[in-house]
Image 1 (cartoon, helix red, strand yellow):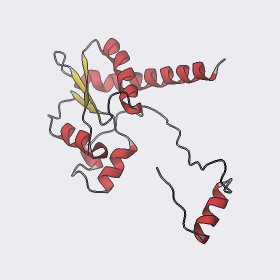
Image 2 (image 1 turned 120 degrees about the horizontal axis):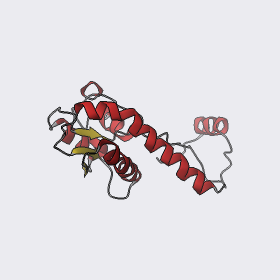
Image 3 (image 1 turned 30 degrees about the vertical axis):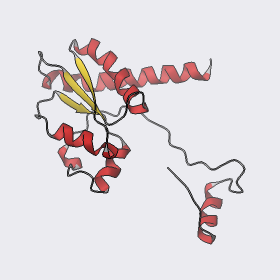
Length: 157
C-alpha cells in the first residue's frame, strides 16, 4: 500500500472520528435553522483551513445542517479567537484551535483565556519534528543540547 494512500486513509479516519465525537454536542446545541460557523485562523489552502474544510464536508451530511467556514487571519490566531468571543454563546460557532492560538494567548495578543472556551474534540494528531540540515555535525538531540551549551546556534520554527 502506498504511503500517500495510507495517509489519506488516516486523515479520513481522523475526520470521521472528530465528527463522531462532536455530533452529540453539536446536535443538542445547534439551532436547526441556522448555519454553524466553523472559524479558523488559517489562510485559504493552509493546513488548518484544509483540515477544517474536510471536517465540514462530513459534518454537513451527518448533522443535516449547513456549516460555514469563516477565515479570520491575523495575530497568530488572536483575531479568530476575538471574533469567536464576540459572537453569541449559542452553539452555532466553533473554532479550530491550534498551538498557535496558545502562543498568542501567552504573548498577550488577545484577552481570551482558555477558560473562555470549551474543548469538544481533538481534530488531528499532527507530528511535529525538530530537524537540522543533514549536512550539520549534529545528528541527535543530545548533541544538539551539548552544542547549544558550547556555542550560539541559530534555529527557526
